[in-house]
Image (cartoon, rainbow over all chains, first blue to last red; front, side):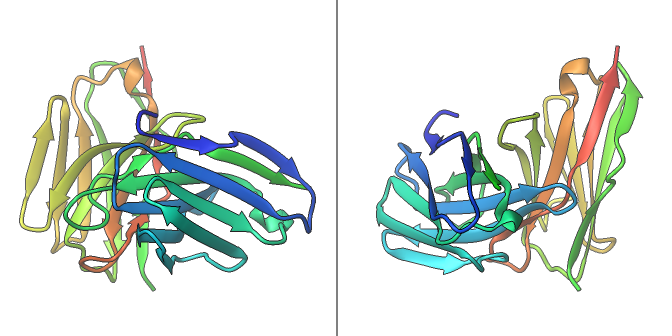
Length: 114
Length: 112
């Protein structure tokens, strides 16, 4: 998707290993978000950022940490991956006057924890 | 508890007909509601935003209504086409200024 890229697109890892997903934007937007999408649960917010070094927890933050050292990059880390973290992860950005106006999503990362 | 409900069953309609998708919510007071389209293997794509003081909003073949009394939004696609087949998600700010919460989505299948 133009302006926002996620890497990797697919990852298979083992239980207990650390995993970092990267979101990169070229829109200079203030807000960045990490969601996970699971059947039966829809999209759920993990963490979000409202500026460099400014982050906050979402609905399902346990087991995840984030960092934003530059406007353009937002990293999601699973310190010790578990099978329950198998999911599709989406990064999103927004730059409106308030958070949440018109999110632009990345293409997603399919993560499998074995 | 707070909930956003969309029909989890797929909606099958014939090409040319109007598709109507429903988004109901409870225990929220959103400042606005949004609709997104998601194709398999892709991220959601923003379609429309409607504010609490707007009854209706249109964009080409799309129309959204927002009834804060009924706590419901309806999403209409007129003259539907097979290319409209996708999953449609509604989302709202749980309380004004808070982060977006998404419904589970409704899959629309338009048959030629």
